[in-house]
Amino acid sequence: MGFSPWAVPVAGILVVAAAGAFGASWAWVAVGALVAAGVGWLGWVVLREARPYSVTSMGSSIRPIALGLIRRRAQILVFEGRDDVKGETYYRPLGGGVEFGERSDEALKREFREELDADVKVGELLGVLENVFAWRGNPGHEIAFVYAAEFVDPELYAKDEMKILDDPATARWVDLDDFKSGDKILYPNGLTELLSSE
Image 1 (cartoon, one colour):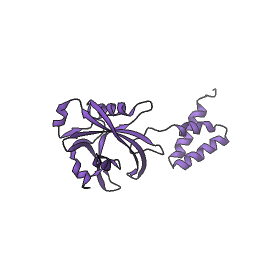
Image 2 (cartoon, rainbow, N blue to C red):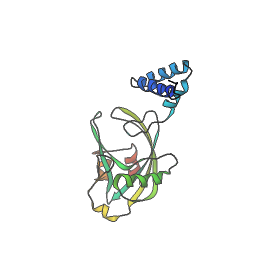
Image 3 (cartoon, rainbow, N blue to C red):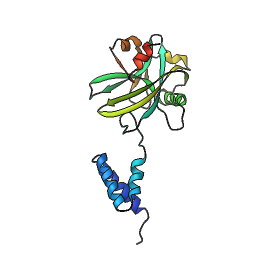
Image 4 (cartoon, one colour):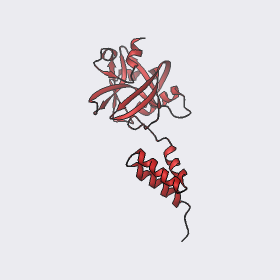
């Protein structure tokens, strides 16, 4: 029975993955062992690739996001989230990650199609916020492009709540004064101040 050229890379990936289950430092120890064995490039291939990230697992990456601020009179459209580690309920405008090679305004349009199956017209860039935070005990770092936006379909403004399609959350209208008074928490950090300065 001949030697398979796939055995070495598969074995290297399994070694690093198994060590990584005990923490990142163990994964790097495994890479060191592979280097000593002359196949260290396998561990580097496994660890160098940025993993897909969400707010729940960002690793050490800075995540660019685009958020759309849609207004209904004195209200803004947000989704409600919960951080059980902090014991807080918070709100954030809809939007999401900007993919490589994608403009932030185009990312915002895509995110609204994915989240609400709705088209939006993206207006002016209201500001760019840097948000370093912890969510459910995990560190996060985001650069948020905050845009004024509006629904193309005016009937959506009549809905008090909208189910987010790719998440178990619900989007709803919340009075802007609730955030300015501190009764409710609005993320990302600095957004309330940005809106208050308008």
